[in-house]
Structures are given as structure tokens and as C-alpha cells.
Image (cartoon, rainbow, N blue to C red; front, top):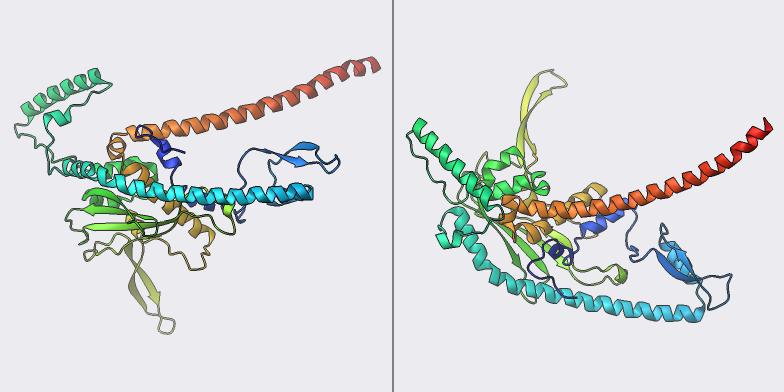
Length: 404
């Protein structure tokens, strides 16, 4: 199994770190049942038919069957065959352990290459913030829509000339790329769902997002760093979110291993300026005294929806037990962290221009198309069944006429 080349996009997120969110979602789909026995693979399995002689085999569909069906299926095997199946399972566990080591080395490669990417990301930050002005040579870019770009440039120049005639005040050249990260947040559905209007003025001060990988010998993890310029909202210049992972099969469920999982996350405190904390809001409530009947107004702070709640995630209890809503919230958090790491940070400019969104939409369209094909096939099967019924009715109709 080799890692995809740099030209791939969506696959980069698929072959690395299957997020733990998938487990939570599967559990919800199964009505809250534990998802440890997520048997993957084909929909048919070779089983021994009890009514046939030893050595005869039949193909039995396992679609829609639960874990008990698989245990029952194994119980039908002759003792000698079952013994060999157990040997294969032991080999499968060894394969899972090797795969875990593979992903550990992948993590080390990511850490190694992150050092090579960082100078480019630093220069990206400097261009965004206006610290550095790229040269003409660095700005050269062959556009697929060059003619459209030239036409648009001509229209801009014409509009600029007309504006100068109306307003003699020269237009200031904006510094860097204004609202770069805020534009990305507003354009990506997963992030815009977290965004509130009162978050936007703060995110205008976001100048960079970085990913840091755990050091060699340390437990597998990655940290998202949100770097802010000085602003009137909080004193913190860097906000962090750590995602801890594990890459080893569970002894009780070794066959459920699919690669590294995010298992926990930890945010950071935010040193808000007085009265600027957007994660809480102050409400006034009237209270009536039971005895005297007098009314007083009290103020209290209550939680408020905000992107910055991202830095105060749900804490997982030592026993790992969470209610359904907390599981979903945590699963979503894991997905967002993974999305920042795999998509937003490496491909920020493409999400700013919208091209990254087009790639994601294309992938979603392919998935929908596959689902649509399956539905069409089901419809065709239904039509065939209806056709058979109609044929029988048509055959029966003349007989009824004869009776009349």
C-alpha cells in the first residue's frame, strides 16, 4: 500500500486517519448498539450447508444479517474446518498489527515532510498578511480562463477610470489578502455552520492556521494552531486544539481496526478582554419574592453559540461513556479537526477561491450518482416484478371473459 502522490486531493483524506466519528455514526445507525462487529467486505460468504455432505459448499447472502448470524454460520462448520478458520483469524490479527506499524511510520513521514512544507506555508502567511509583496515572477499564473480574466481586467480598469472621474480621491491598495481565512470559513459548509455573526470581526484578525505533529517517541497526535494578530477581543495570540490518536487494534475487537483513530481532543483557555467573550451572553431575568411580592432584576451569563466554543470541547470521561448527543457533538468535532488538517491547511488558497469546494462537490456528486444507480436498479427490479404480475392478470382476463 503506497501513499498517493501530491496530485491527489480527496484520497489524501481517505487513506489516512479514518476518524472515530465513523464509529459513532455507525452506532447511531444501529439504534445505539455497539458497533464492534462491523463486518466489512462482500455481501456473500461461503458457508457449509448442514443438509449437504461435508465438503459441499453453498453461497449464503449475509446482507442484513447481524453478528449473531456470523457466529451461527461459523458454528455450522465441521470441527476441522473451524480449527483452520481460527488459524486464519490469528493471521488476520497479525496483519492488523503490521498495518498499525505502517500507519505509525506514515505519521513519522508526515512529521518529516511537514518541516519541508512549513517554509512555503510561512511565505503564504506573509503574503496574506501583507508582510511580503510577491514579485511579478512569483505572481505569474497560467489561467485556464485567460481570455475571461483579460476581459474582466479591462472592465475593472474601465470602471476604475469612471470612478476616478466621479471621485478624485485615490483608492487605497488593500494590504495583503483581506479576510482570507474568514472567506474560507464562510465558504465551507462544515465551518460556516459553526460561524456566528459576532465571530466574524474576530476572525478578520486570523492570520494563519498551522498543523503540528507529535514528536518522535511521543503518543500519536496533531495540534491545530490558530495564529491571530493583536486585536481588541482577546490577549491570546495563538489558540490551540490538540487531537490525540491511537494506531493499534483493540484486543477485544482486533478486526475493527481500519487505521489510526482520533480518540480525544483538548482545547485551550482564551484570555478574553473584558466584555468581549462571545462564547457567553448576559441575560436579565426578573425574580419575584415569594413572601413580599417584590420583583427584582438579576443578570446572569449563559453559554452562547460561537465558533470559539471549538476551543472548549466535550471532555471524555475515564470510562468513555457519553450520551447520544455528546457522542454526535464529539464525532463532529473530530471530523472538523481532521478536515482542517487534511484539507483546509494544505489547500487554503483553493478554498479561498472556491476551487477546493468544486473538488469536494465533484466527489459528492460521484457518491450521489452511485447511490442513484442503485436506486434505479431497485426501481427496475420493482418494474420487472410488476410486469410479471401484470402478465398473469392479462392471462387470467380471457378466462373471466369466457365465464361471462
